[in-house]
Length: 350
Image 1 (cartoon, one colour):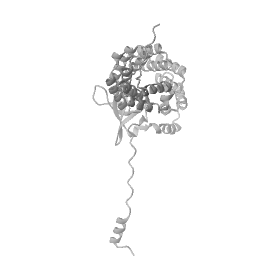
Image 2 (cartoon, helix red, strand yellow):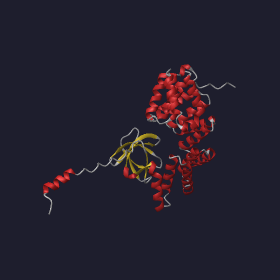
Image 3 (tube, helix red, strand yellow):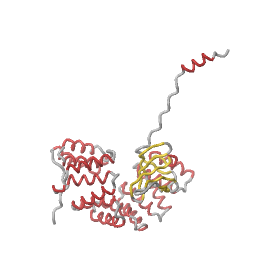
Image 4 (cartoon, one colour):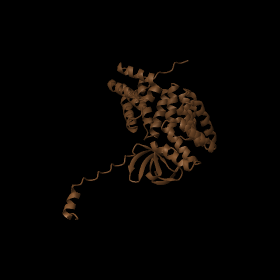
């Protein structure tokens, strides 16, 4: 005998409600790749202009600023200048998912060189350099006339510690595109790692001559000047880098470092150094250990040694910072504990 309607409604009302589905995790702060490099559409706000539509040659990663329905807002470079744009979520894959995504596609399309490049760059950003190098070896073999694949294999070799191999790759990239500043700049970074400050300066100088607004070249030419003991020139380049890269943390951090540690008291400014260091910290979301060390130096110059110790200790919690700057970082921490600010040292005159 069928149940009365009133009883059926009562039973339905008593049944527990289905649990609400958890909202999908936000993509903000993550890096994304285009599925189809060269054919995905991105809506770009170029520097100094209005909205435009541009085909996305998105071999490199872009960081998500906003996660909205159907699209993400990303930070990227257009003609060497930082800007923002939007791309459909259906056209991108997150960095952590990228190797598996492109591997699956490459099983169906084994000759898809763009997919090999994308997967290789994802491996590089995930610090899986051996796998990245295999993909870029294949890319170089497939496209030996492309400066881009030589340049990016050079970056991978740099990360893997093969500095001689990196220089050879950048040499080839420069031959293929002698009017582009990027491979010159990257070759300069290798020379900085080798402590060849004069050689690095020449590379950054050449990059600036090709593009006077190329901010990264001023940033690292400042480092080369510092290595050569040319602290006033280093400070000037740091100021230019900070102006040309207003949305990046490194220009502000470099300027803060020199304002805090310049060997001439008249060139130091603890308050300004601290303001620039805090700007760098905010722009980088407090993730870069080197910025934490700069913040510590700025606090020391401003006379707040307790905060200097706190931030230098935080920098030393980062394994990469310890690997690259461990003894020097520990020495600075010991100095701050003794209430001694860090100072760059002028080279002895020969």
